[in-house]
Image 1 (cartoon, rainbow, N blue to C red):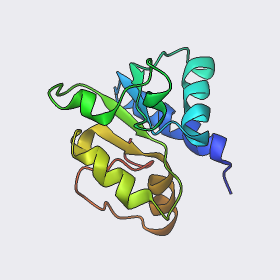
Image 2 (image 1 turned 90 degrees about the horizontal axis):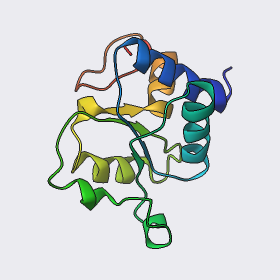
Image 3 (image 1 turned 90 degrees about the vertical axis):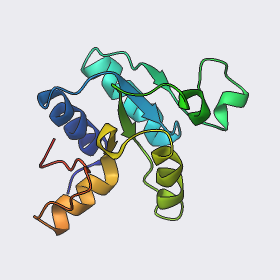
Length: 130
C-alpha cells in the first residue's frame, strides 16, 4: 500500500511525464501543504499559486477560486482533498472555475486505479493515464 507522500509524488511525476505544467495547489490543508513541499523540494517546481477560500482571508498570497472567474486556461490543478465527507462538494466548487481536464484528483485517482482498470472518462486523469 502506498503512503500519501508516494501517491502525491507519483501523481506529480506522471503529470510531468504527460507534459503538464503551471501547477496550482487546491485546497491548502494538510495534503495541500505536503503537495507543495513535494512539488517544490523534490521536483524544484514552484506552483503558480495556492487556492484556498478560507485561508485567503488570512494570507494575501493565497487566492480564492473566484480569482479565476475570468482567467481561463493553461493550468494544472493538483486537487489535494482526501476527505470523503467533503470531497465531492469541494471538487464541484473547483469545477465551476476549471475544466475537468485541468484537474488532477490525486487521491481519487489512486483509489480508482486500485479498484478499476478501465477509464472512467470525463477527462479525469488517473494515475495510469497521467
